[in-house]
Length: 327
Image (tube, rainbow, N blue to C red):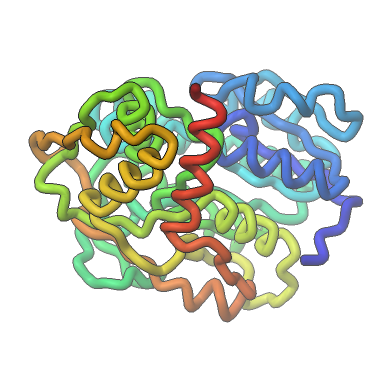
């Protein structure tokens, strides 16, 4: 991929899971990178090794503050906007805070990017936007009604991006992430994602709790596929590829039961006792989408997206990373 090292790129939420992986990749490519993070869900440890790099600049600030957004977007070529309050349960518990960060903060970033002359605004959208649509695979142009405040915020982001493209000529690309997992994803906290949470529980010889019967399925997407998609969004030159949204996934689905069994299998290679730990089952979680499977044809056609990691290959990489970094 021909990503010019001359680009100065802003990564919002750059100390978080996806953002820190993007920062690492861009720095290794020779880009100048500014990271904006308020460390509410991100961690300094994720980017600490980059602080001595002359091409890396950290701004400790909040996207809810327009002045901070203007400072962060100054002299920036491309924005990779990852900053958000994730988690469906968190948004159900606290919809006001989710709205302020995910919508007001998003709008601040759009305004600052427009006014600073940013070339392209690439943002993290979400598969939650498909809501109650039962059609599989999920195709970008066909969505349903949102099932949570979080899903509403991510859909509103797409609407605002579209308006800024048509009204202010700001190039935008939305990336609808499907259940991203991999290195640096936080296994702790009340709203930890299912894979790192289960990994930590298995490693501690605890039984993970599956919400429902475990037959819900997800298009789990390894972090390196997501990085590839962000880079392709930066270098896209086809006008048809701009000012739209894309699914970011592998294009396959795995049930929660299957995911848990594979985790046990891979972790038991390090600790055989893990293979004997049972999973338990609890009530279904409010706001969850039953099944998730993405069509990635649009991304293949317009961005030349070609995901390198299927679920099993990505999960094995993730398990190796957690074992070496959590023990």
